[in-house]
Image (cartoon, rainbow, N blue to C red; front, side, top):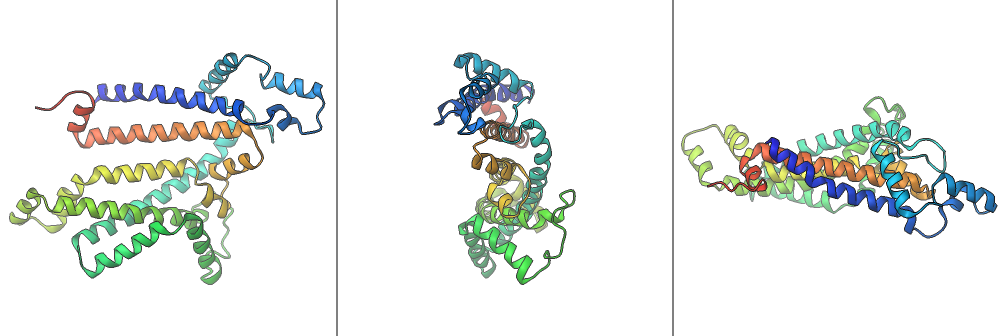
Length: 316
């Protein structure tokens, strides 16, 4: 397991380097003068020259890249050209909001998706299965921005459960219930389809029929035998969804006015705050790679055969 983990970490290094290079080039291929974007259209040449020197735009490209890489390795993402604040300080303030939203949405997605998928698989072809299919297809088809608007309108206007609540205290859970439900229920719809397909395939295997013939309890067959062997695609979906939540759910955070990474990135794009855009892309890529690495390690822990195959050891 240790050997496999080390190989996976080393395999991620070239990807990280490529992402670092692309985020650096972002500032150098966009149209316009970054220094003028900072100073404004009426800035004189002396001011522009000073800003170019501060941003190291007057140095060769490779020199700037190595300087940029060195700062990133130290955890220094630079300062926002709009507010002048260190970007890492803003990230430390906003990431807990996105993390709390991601955890709540992932929990909602996992519980609802797995439950609906198992119920549909057990009642294959029945009324419950057909009703679940309609609900999941609808949930997958509805755009996320429309779902967010509808849920916000229903629970703050038509059924004003959250109308008088304090949704500005982000230290609690209340402001995250509706946005997490918006993200989680949509992801749960897709997860339910994956769980249903996986469970139906597993339930048709010979060892399940053998377990039934031995008189094992239905709950034990479903959870100890069937669900365990259908976990790989389920973990994949949950991990990818969680990664997308952490990378900043821009639409949901904007609609529900959550001060997380998503709304932070949206503001940076609208204000052409290039260093913040760079840092957001880079952090998002790091998160995505880390979640995928963690998912691979979970795969290997659940199924040693996968670990042996990926390590080049073919089981005989």
